[in-house]
Image (cartoon, rainbow, N blue to C red):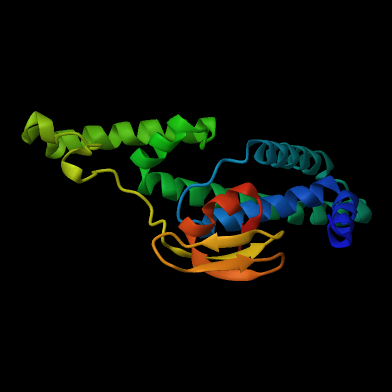
Length: 217
């Protein structure tokens, strides 16, 4: 650990918890919108943010009607901050739902191996997939032979499960020295040091992003 890392830790400790949560939520929002596949759900972060939103709403409701100009000005600031948090949470969840709608079977398989969804998202996924399966069955699948009615069929060397494109190019910034990254399927490799900004295939940096060494921008 060098002096830059030490100073970064000191600066991080001096930042108020609410500000750190906002920064983490913003990063999670950007990453979810940029990554081609669904990222793990940040349970503790969203729980803290939702609790903060709930308390701020209660405070606004309690103070509404107070004629003190100072109180009114404070409420304007609180409401502005509240709307910013609410926008980020809504947009973050919409980005995740869009991916769930696009690749439900793929995400369901991943979630069964390692937790990826929140409880509400998993309920949405199962109910959404059940409705789709019922609709497809009543529309046309029931007319097919029994062996061709599965939506998750992988026989014959062809998978019916739609997956995100892992070769999608993404922009990443190095939060620390990563070392050499090899681009699978090519003879390309490059070294990534702290502060570097690169555009590269998602499949090449996925592990480093999930480990927190790189962040999506």
